[in-house]
Length: 267
Ligand SMILES: Nc1ncnc2c1ncn2[C@@H]1O[C@H](COP(=O)(O)OP(=O)(O)O)[C@@H](O)[C@H]1O
Ligand SMILES: [Mg+2]
Image (cartoon, rainbow, N blue to C red; front, side, top):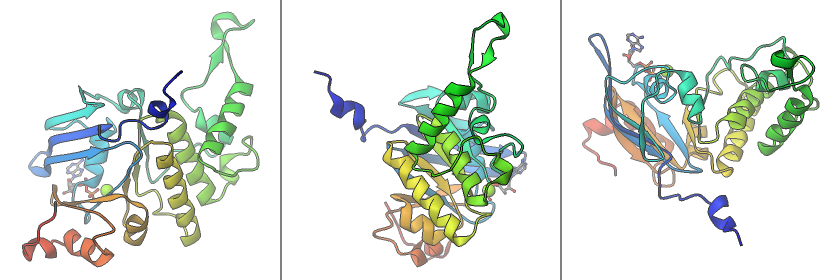
């Protein structure tokens, strides 16, 4: 008999993504210094820090949009050289940015498949055609997996609320990101209730064993949904905190550097 336990519960002791001693320089600006960070299956990791701390730079390196000046990125223990976001996506790394990168004039299913349309060979021969039925069915399945409730996958994205758009962007990431989902300020433009929905959505993603790296300024939310919180300060990881042991005020004191000045230690 097949060992279903292994399939359903991947080795949680083996990181999916390892950032190893990564540094990044923009000319004279040292944006990241020797950053190391591991992300395990099914985890929600919060990445916090003040403006300019290096959060987006780190996410962009993992997403293949930027190259590190030095250091190594590993996926499933193997070093990878991601030269573009396309490389990262091919490796199962999906990113949801604040602007969501959705096409408002297209339907939900077309957005989910944007740039990766399924074709099948038919009377049109080498042209193939877009396998619309399959894409619509898969969209419904993908959104169900994240328990996103949307009345029709044929609806235009431009007609959706901010929260629903967010859900489509996350649904797209989950549909394609079999390994990890990165989110850079996914709730910045949303109202309170919609932010809560996205929190739920992130939990649903993680419950599929797909880890999430979440950048957010919404510290109460980060505190409530993350398993681990990594604090960047002037391009360095200065703390890794367990929400159960560190109240929001303590996270704030690390973000501002006050805890560092006070000589406190974590890890
Ligand atoms: N393209 C760039 N060119 C030069 N400096 C940059 C560039 N992008 C970011 N920086 C600098 O790198 C540092 C980290 O920025 P960033 O990663 O955007 O931080 P965060 O997302 O935490 O606000 C900042 O000092 C920022 O000014
Ligand atoms: Mg940023």
